[in-house]
Image 1 (cartoon, rainbow, N blue to C red):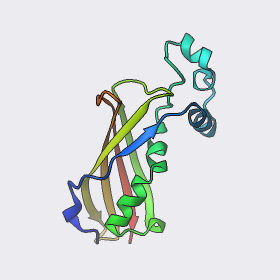
Image 2 (image 1 turned 135 degrees about the horizontal axis):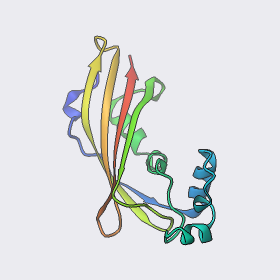
Image 3 (image 1 turned 90 degrees about the vertical axis):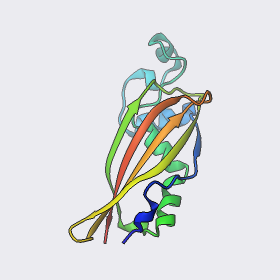
Image 4 (image 1 turned 90 degrees about the horizontal axis):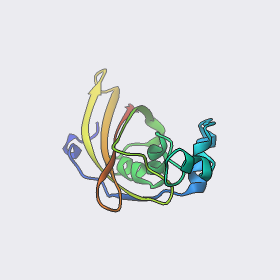
Length: 146
C-alpha cells in the first residue's frame, strides 16, 4: 500500500520551454489538422503571438520533465503497474511557443478500492508563466494495480 502520509506532499517543480518543433510534433502525433498548430502565419492571423500549444500538450511536457517518474519512485510504485486513469485541464489563457512554463505539483490524494487491489494517486498541478501568473491547472489520476 502507498503511504498515505504523502498526501499534500509538494513535488519538485518542472520548467518547460515551449518549443515550436515540439508543438508541431505533438500536434501531428495527436492527428491535429488545424493550420494554427503548424504554420506561424496562420497562428498570427488567428490572433496568437506564435504557435499555440494544443490543449493536452502540458501533460506530455510534464511527462518529458521526469516529474511523474520521480513521484512514482518516491512512492515506491513500479511503473509497470501504473495506468493513466484521468486527466483534466483548465486554462486561464493559451500557451504559445517561445514561452517558459513552470509546473508546480502536489499529491492531492491517495486512496484505494477493491480492498487495495487498486490504488489511486491524485496529482494536482498549476502551470505558471515567467510573470508567475497561473496559465493552467491540471489534475491527473493514476491507477496502480496491486
